[in-house]
Image 1: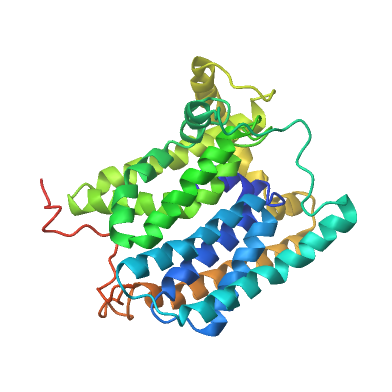
Image 2: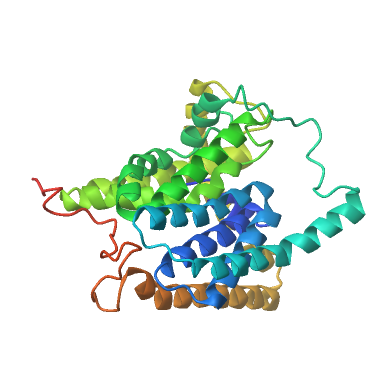
Amino acid sequence: MLATPLVAYVLFGASYSHTFSVFTITAFAILLYATRHDRTPGQWFIAGLLGGLASITHVQEALFLALIPAEAVYEVLHRTWSPRRLSGYGLLAAGVALPVVPQLVVDQVIFQQWLPRPAPNISLDFARPHLLDLLVSTHHGWLSWSPIVALGLLGLPAVVRRLEWFGSGLLLVGLGEFWINASLSDWWGGNAFGARRMTDQSLLIGLGLAASCAWMIERRLHRLAVALVAAGVAWTALLLAQYYYLIRTDVGPPWRDFLIGQLQAIVYVPRLFIQGTVVREVADGAWLLALYTALVIAAVVAAAMTLGLRTAPRVNGRPGGGIPSLDSSEKPARSLVPVPARFPATG
């Protein structure tokens, strides 16, 4: 998060939809993968509910529902699919409909159409997408504003190989969303920090980054892995300072000015730490309000970390390094850590 545009929308612009999209997408995808062997009726319904919430938060997130047919195709090819899955699909559809149908009704009442009107002066041209611009332009390009994404992309072959249908499904969804975003007339996402519309690929890039780092660690290049991640975080911190205090217009500067701006932004980095609500309340003298806000934030973070620690063993196997769980083909689930025999350590 700290090395991608997501940091701006979690810490500085939480009212944007991106934080909520990433949460619902990640929860939906992880629930599917964690329950892939024996999904209960309740889990089917909750998965649908999360998928529906993601879809009404940002309509193109409906593409993540493609993980369901990706899983089904994998099971059919490996002869593990069962007609009992049909009832699960029905429960998932009901879960999706629960948030989506009321939203459609509201859109019809307010806008006299089933979907909200798109933003004015924005069009789609799927035949001529701005693929290269969306990747490397200084005008919010995905790689130019978040170089760590390149390291994540390098790890995607390992993700697909080891997570099979889950990795393949996420990759196909990612390619689809990249094409859609590049096809928009405002492919840069307006006056925003970085490629904000690509933040919904945080799970995919996170898995790819983990695979790349695991590969380096297995080859005893752990210092290089740490250095690359740290460099990505530092680049983003400087870019945040440049965006908030130096960039005055919503245009892509020449690369020379863009890089010089990173150097000039160094003196503004300390100002980033007064952007938070708690610090501002302290500066205003509202000590009790600052304490209350800090306690609420701490409680939410603690709850999230506790939930994550409790559910992690269910995804990766039994606590304490027990036998890994089986995947859909009844084989041990694969992790992102390279196999020593395949990736021998050197140096």
